Image 1 (tube, rainbow, N blue to C red):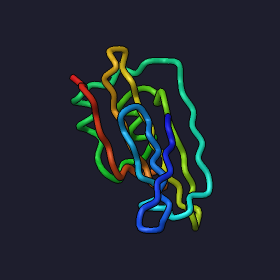
Image 2 (image 1 turned 45 degrees about the horizontal axis):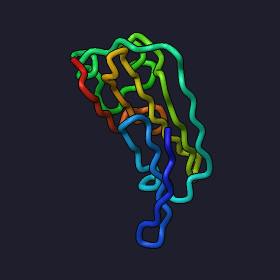
Image 3 (image 1 turned 60 degrees about the vertical axis):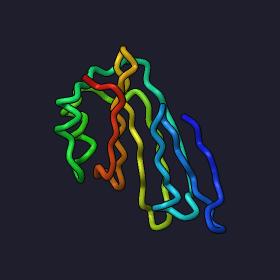
Length: 116
């Protein structure tokens, strides 16, 4: 995971990058107060069909139930008012992946790379 801080119109914008996916947490949280990351050792086994089952506003537990595994990588940010954002990535053995972004435990964005 890489974190980049960039100035945008006089404001600081934090980009949290996991694999090839980045979440611009500054767009939601001006003055992000914290960021933490963790990685797992196991490989996921997520298919394109499972990825397509994930809907906006689904909760983390629902996504884990669909994918069948905990994510292999994640990052967490907390902004003003206690709003939290998480970016989780499930990486398959063939390096294909699904990335899901949550705001207060609800999906607000997702992306995939080479899922079959």
